[in-house]
Length: 292
Length: 242
Ligand SMILES: Nc1ncnc2c1ncn2[C@@H]1O[C@H](COP(=O)(O)OP(=O)(O)OP(=O)(O)O)[C@@H](O)[C@H]1O
Ligand SMILES: [Mg+2]
Image (cartoon, rainbow over all chains, first blue to last red; front, side, top):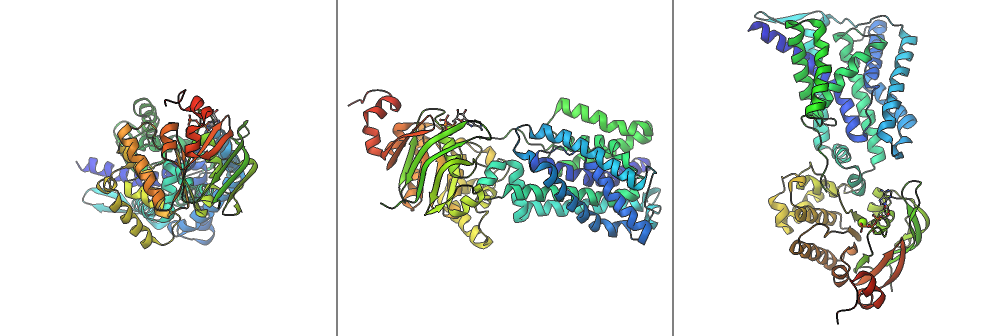
C-alpha cells in the first residue's frame, strides 16, 4: 500500500511538471494550428538560462523562473515574426509549420550545443536532493516544489484564459478564428501573444526541469514524444486536457517504471500515443469538427 | 438620397486566385433592408467578405460614411460599425450563450455596460435566456441563428450584414429569422441580407440587388426588382404567376 502511494505521489509530482512542459505546446497548437516540434528544445533553452544564473550568480532556479519565462517569451515573439507570420496565409500552413519547427528544433539544439557543449547539466539547489517523509512515504522536495509551482502556473493560466478579456480573445480564436476576427479580435495580435505565452511557458518549464531532470542540448528528442502523447491524450489545444493527460501518463509511467523496469517507462508514452491516435484521435477534451 | 455605404466597381478574390467579384456595386441607404439575390456561386458571400475586410479589395472602393474602408482589417471595420454574420460557423460552439454574447461585445471597453446589454438581449430573447449557460453548439439551428443575429445588437452597429440566415431552417423558423431581422431594422439598424430564396428575401426588403458571376446586374427598389421580367424569369422560377 505504501509502495503504491509512493509511486502515485512521485508520478503526480512529475506529472505536474510534464503538464507545464506540454501546456505551451497545446496553447500554440490551439490558437495557431502550429505543431511546434521545437517546443522541448525551447524548454531546454529555458533550462540553460536558469543553469547559467545558478552557476554564475547562485540564483535559485525557482526564483529564476519568471526571468526565463520572459526571456523565452521574447524569443517567441522574434521566432513568430521571423518564421510563422508570413506562412500564416499559405494554404498548407499546418504542414509547413511541422517542417519549419522540425528545422527550428535542430537549430536550437545546434546553437545550445555550440554554447554549452553536450555535457549533461543539472542545477542543484538544496531542495533538489532533500525529501520529506510521511510515514514510510518519501517525497523528494525538488519534484514536489516543481510539481506544485507547475500546477500553480497552469491554474493562473486557466484563470487568465477563462476570465480576462485577452483570455476570451485567445479562447475565441482557438475555437473559431474567423468568428473571433469578425467580432473585433485582432487575430494577428492574439497569435503573437499566444505564441509568446506558449514559449514563455516553455521557459518557465525549463527552470523547473533544470533541477528535476539532467539535460543536454539533444535531450529534447526524448521529450517531444512524451509531450506529444500527453497533449494528444488530453486533446490538442485543451489546457485542462494537457494537465489530465500529463497526470495520467506520468502516473502510469511511474508504475510501469517501478514494476516492470525503468526502460519500459518511456515506452509508456510512445505506446499511449499510438493507442490514442487509433482509438480516440481527438483525445479526452479535444475539439470535434465544429458546428455551423 | 443619403448613402450610408457605397460599393463601387470592386474586384476581389481569395488569396492569389482569380477574381470572384468583378464589377460589383451596391448602394446602402440608412435604415433600410437590402437584399442581394443571385444563383449559387454568384459571389454573394464573397462580396460580403470583401466589404467586411476578410478579403482584400483589388480594385474599386468601399466607402462608409464618406470614409474609404479599403485595406482595413475585419476588426477595424467592425469598430466603424459594420457587423457581419457569416453563412456558417458564426458562433463559438464550446462557449455558452452568455459567453458568445460577451464575445459579441468584445470591442466594448465598459464591462458593466456590456453586462447590462447582455442582460437586455437575454430579456428580449427568452429562448436565449433559457439557455444562457448552455453551450452554443448544443442548440438547434434556429436557436443558433437567433443567437448569431441577437449578438450583433450588443454593439449597436450601423449596418448588419446577414449571409443566408434562413439556410437549412424549417419554414416556420425561417419566418422567425425574418421577424428578428425586421425588428433589427425597426430599431434603426441598416440590414444587408443575402438570400437564396429570392422571393422571400425581396418581399422582406426595401432594396434589391441582383448579383451574377461576380457582377451587379441590377439594383433597385425591392418591388421593382420583384416585378422585373428578367428577374422573374432568371431567379424567381419562370413566368410571373399573375
Ligand atoms: N474560400 C474560398 N477559396 C476559393 N474560392 C472560393 C472560396 N469560397 C468561395 N469560393 C469561390 O467563389 C465563388 C463564389 O462563391 P460564393 O460563396 O461567394 O457564392 P455565393 O453566391 O455565396 O453562393 P451560395 O449561394 O452557394 O452561398 C465560387 O465559385 C466558389 O468556388
Ligand atoms: Mg454564400
